[in-house]
Image (cartoon, rainbow, N blue to C red):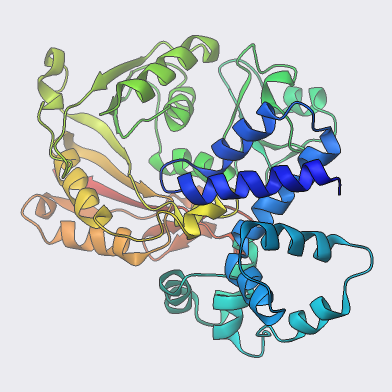
Length: 413
């Protein structure tokens, strides 16, 4: 590769190491690549692949450097990528690769060769047993770009005909897989609001909520509104959705997306909350809208995002610690439960694989005073393939999807 591409890759890697704890990898790479206007398309692809590959397999790459007697630096990691992609690999590299743990050593293979931190590796082993390695391999693959067709404005068949090389998703009735990664804004139909970028498992989470026309739904943690728009389409743009979030910036982003999608039933509500997630402003008092309770409270729960490693490999290293997430998740589930009407649904969704953020949160809630008014519902028949007991789970190695977890709780009465 050209010297300027190599130099750019080294500089971007150093920036990620310095800022990765506060900025996501894709934002850093995209901003830096756009700023380097002298790079051609081939150089941009090469350095992007070099950075993402090294992030996905960081422990492996560091082990190779040490075996080859190289100091682990940004330059050595990028040079190592050059060696690995060369048509004539160096003999020294071939020997180092042979020393990496193989599949015959599943624990070492998962932790070193596939580069999973100890906590994530152990979680995969406990959850999946002999499937842990297959799951680790699948999570290291680059996810395809998937869009959700907006049923308020188009049909999947129409979008498939418009986007050459695209094909329907396996499970979502709205999903289309794009043939390559490209700027979504340039694809015919985007500006008209006919589709949105949304991973297939995230689309299935909307199906899991069983949103119906004319219902009242409260979404907690609405963020930029990906699931909000999907819920509105499933409701045929009838009823009401109250999109709650503590961030004015995220809600402003959602509000900008509504007109393009043709959605008119969403009202955004900014909450105040302390550092533990306890609301300072009660959402049911805002405009007198919540006295009767919602048909469905949909909690798009803050989590580590460990189920999205195919598209966010940096979450292995920054944000991998579970930390205070379980406490926040428990508080949000308890607060959200008070907004559900009798007979209504409380949906708890994460894109994390750890049990401490999933089953354990739900089980603890059901034993709490607020939870005694709820029972665990099963997974809808249309999603039976993803049922693990009464919980909803998707997997990269089984289904080719990001890892999502869902629990649906029904209020008694």
